[in-house]
Amino acid sequence: SSFGGTGMLAQLLDYSTMSPKTNGRMSPHMTMQGMNGHTMYPDHMMSPASHPDWHHSSAGMLQQMRQTSRPETSRDHHIPAQMHRDELPLLACLHRLNRGLNAKGLTFSSAFVLYDKDMERAVMVEGMVAACQQHGMPLSRQEIESLFARLARCSTSGRPPRIFFEDLDASLQRIPEPVPEIQWAKDLVRAVDKITPLENVFSSLGRESVHAADLQGVLSKHAPLSDTQWASLLPLVDKHLDGTIPWKTLLQWAGVQTSPP
Image (tube, rainbow, N blue to C red; front, side, top):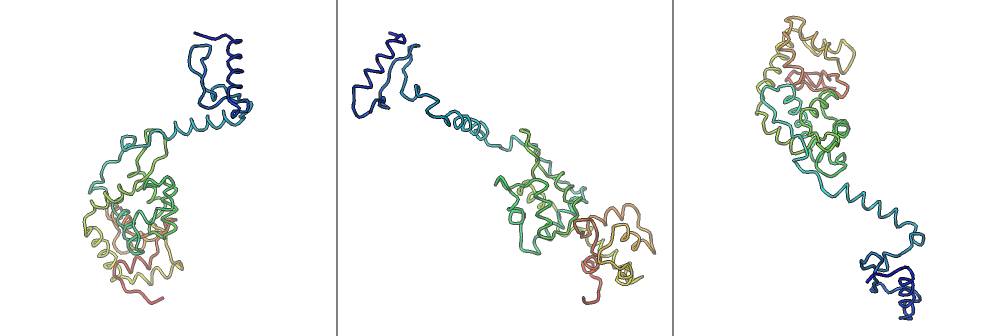
């Protein structure tokens, strides 16, 4: 049977006097029948005024539950296709990144871990650029961003793109060792050096690092490089974050003798 307002008040009064241990409050184990016929517990009848934070905290909990109820899986990403052998510029950038990490005893994971904010073994583009700058990786910002754009996963849930360490590792496995173009590039630099000592030419510029156009001009002085040659050479060359090329590092990489510092 259902209770009217008078009946409900009478039952409340009866419960409040049943046990002196409740001090006028209902025991948490007591129940009563509400006007709609459903069983009501004491917590259901608590006044919001007596618990001002209750509504705010519960709303916050519900919002958090909605946000964390289902973690992202691989199905929530547009996973990039594997890199192909004809993507030489990007393969060369990845090869140089890995070489730079190995020289400092680092891996993708250990180098980028500080920027893996969500602890998912992935970083956003700003984190990747910052990590490469922190560890002095021999890539320009443009190269880092191009590598990120090629290998990052785009989330279908609207989250910013991230590059996952496992995708970097998988792409690295597809790079042949040794890379044939690397030996070709070294041979080209040494061939020019035999005609004109490159250390003297670069030293005359008065800078430790040169722009790509400067390098192209020096190497093309005696035998102009074709567009294909230059497009193949440039991705193989170490760079600073601003895109300039440390020419002494280039010569040492190619096996050209340079004066001691």
